[in-house]
Length: 121
Image 1: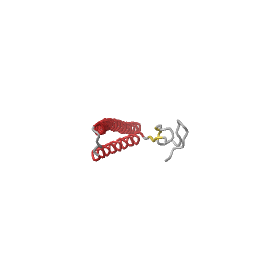
Image 2 (image 1 turned 90 degrees about the horizontal axis):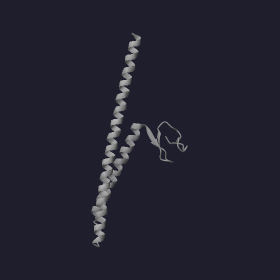
Image 3 (image 1 turned 90 degrees about the vertical axis):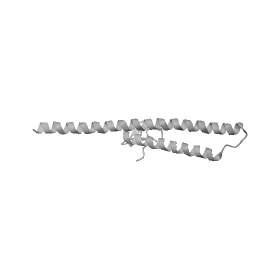
Image 4 (image 1 turned 30 degrees about the vertical axis):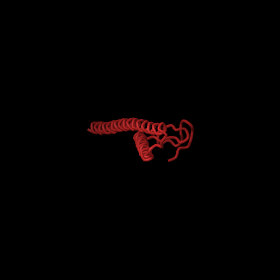
């Protein structure tokens, strides 16, 4: 009976870890999709901003400062959301970024295996 109980417990552990892993994959895919959507929104805003600036230039006018500021705020918000989503992905994958070379490193490493830089806590 001990053997059966042990096998059952191991099967339950495997099932739980499989569910956790698949949830991590789903969350990563959702985050990457949201990043792609925000990047498209940023491209659209930048295009609108460029057209606004060029139209003002072409007409010998100053661009509408309020509209420019509004577009810049939208950009800032979008960039912040992307930054947060990338941080969420790093947390899911249990990685951190080396400040020296920019590589993603497993969170438990104390030194970057790429450049040797000591990694902060």
